[in-house]
Image 1: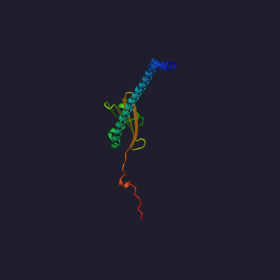
Image 2: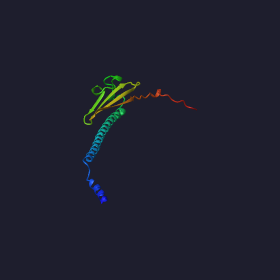
Image 3: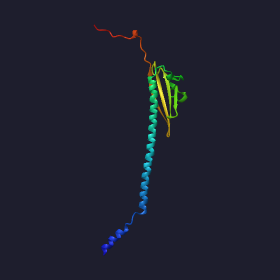
Image 4: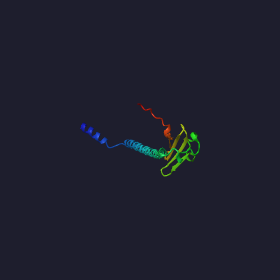
Length: 163
């Protein structure tokens, strides 16, 4: 009879979870859900930043292609403000060329320093600014446009002929 009492007390003592166990499991589950929500927020911000950088790059690439394919003396790429090297960091209406696109959310400022770094070349700085939920982001691109001059045929050196 003692054996039956031992087994019966064991089975009767397991009646379910205690309130403390339930509270602890709910706390652990809540922490996991909050961590997942935080990761989702970070992922959305990262995607937004990537989208802004892509918009910057596409806008800048378009303008760079225009500059590269344009003639050296194109009116769009002249140091209109006569700032030279001192004006390369100017933005907005102070820049030599300015374009703002509200729809796509970017601003392009282009500045020119003539005869820099050498004669018959232009140092061109393109500043792209985008607005986003985290504030504004600026990207700067520098490149050089050179004027290629052909020498008259009489000035082109010729190689000596061998006999």
